[in-house]
Image (cartoon, rainbow, N blue to C red; front, side):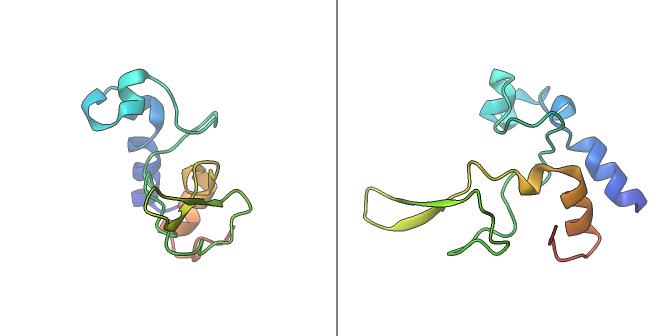
Length: 97
């Protein structure tokens, strides 16, 4: 693992990040957004999010907004928060687990 990747994993670990309460409501409430033992917040906003899920996660679903537009709901997807996937995304394996 590259030195830069290791630093990202350490710096963005939920337990370390939650002291910055002003950065996220989850930190403020000391509550994880996903039920993962080791949650990493580096990819809080998934880089594979778009009109479709670019990794074809089985956890996503579509919801309809109040304006009638269908958008992705990735709230059940944990892919970008798992350390082994973050390593692949940062070190160039196209994020495919």
